Length: 106
Image 1 (cartoon, rainbow, N blue to C red):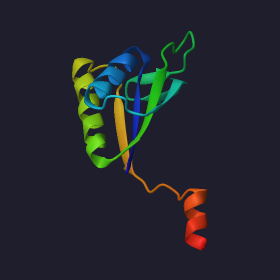
Image 2 (image 1 turned 60 degrees about the vertical axis):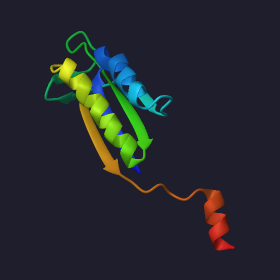
Image 3 (image 1 turned 180 degrees about the vertical axis):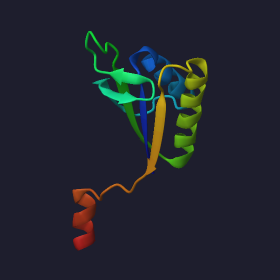
Image 4 (image 1 turned 135 degrees about the vertical axis):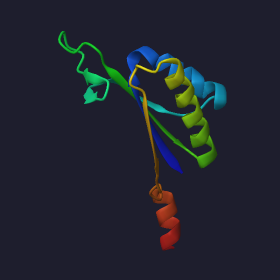
């Protein structure tokens, strides 16, 4: 499985969602709003001095779905090249659930 993290300016939040939804209807995700930080596109603190904020989508998926996510993000980046959209994807192994652990011990 892969974990996809998409950091983006709030101005493209819906564009990213729609681009992924087109490729993966009904996909599951977590959304963290009002993400502060500093990247190549500048500082995002949501203050009078640094007014913009980012969002963070976190999506767990199989490899084929992760490729679709990457394609969706690439399409939004192409449409909005100056909005600071970043995608990071990591391979991960989920921990066994308690019920799986109990079965293994018996």
